[in-house]
Length: 187
Image (cartoon, rainbow, N blue to C red; front, side):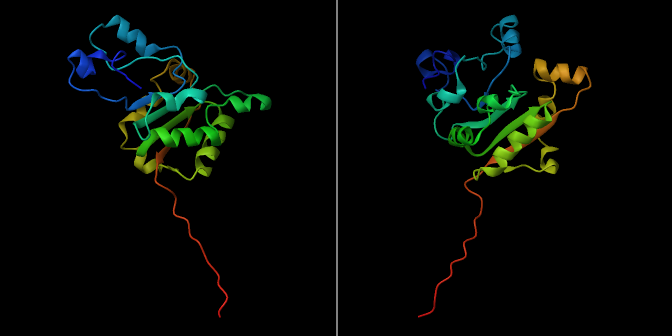
């Protein structure tokens, strides 16, 4: 995707430094609180935009293979009813799409206040061979993690109401180590 019209200050064709690629994506970004900051402070925030699209269908149209360094799924819609689970933003099929657009070593952040949805997301990422869960001890030094709880309107509401939140963070890997045992009959 050509980002020069969306981020002209970073485009060499518009006098910017170079044609930088987007590195972070917040999928299902809610009501646009960060965009409100951009409107209130013109010229200050030139590195954020909102593209209204269906990420479940069109994500690879926006990002190259391995382009993203971080992906965020912050308080996604839980789609509570069983017949609506197919609309959840994390699934086996979509995990493959996410693995395609995120770089090896890239990080996927998920947080929700719905335990069932948390368990769903964790099970799907755990089952997918190109992601590994990052241990809590490693997350202690990740400056992004503390912001996840309060960076969205939904997160602020949960914090204000002293609700429980569930965090899971995954790293994109090349592939999990698989051990094969091959038996052969002696000749």
